[in-house]
Image 1 (cartoon, helix red, strand yellow):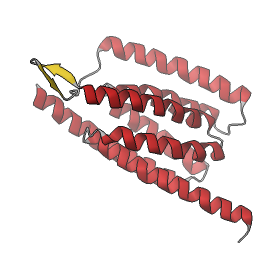
Image 2: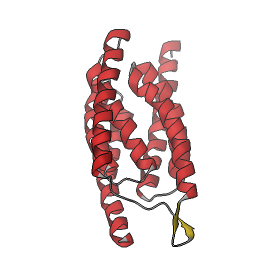
Image 3: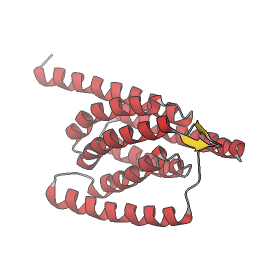
Length: 200
């Protein structure tokens, strides 16, 4: 086996490991388990290498953001919320209309900025799609940390678009991962909606 072939095989195992941890991450998210953030951190570290190799630079940069937001979300979920004089689990909530407007504007601004950077400063093969999924992912992960239920809807959009991008780049373990993500996002929305109903 040539050195290049061996290198590709080793890299493939990094992608497979990242995909496996990514599936664990989203399953923990659905169940509102604190291990969401630990598995998210590990997934991000592995996908730094995967996306760099595939020239998905915005997605690669997004992994650095995921590391930071994972620590932020971890702290929020541990602290929980003061309810009736007692510290309890951070509850699932709906995004306010004001928040939705701000998040929509933020997503649009991020999309344009990321597209311009990728288009003019990198050799990214898919600057429009890469910047779109990255912008929405930034917003959705913040909403996950805050336990806003609508973040699952954003993930469905991101996951479907991402599947097309990763098929194009032949990242097949990641295609499978994002297929699972799509189904899990639908499941997660339903589970979190039940949680809101129970709280109400």
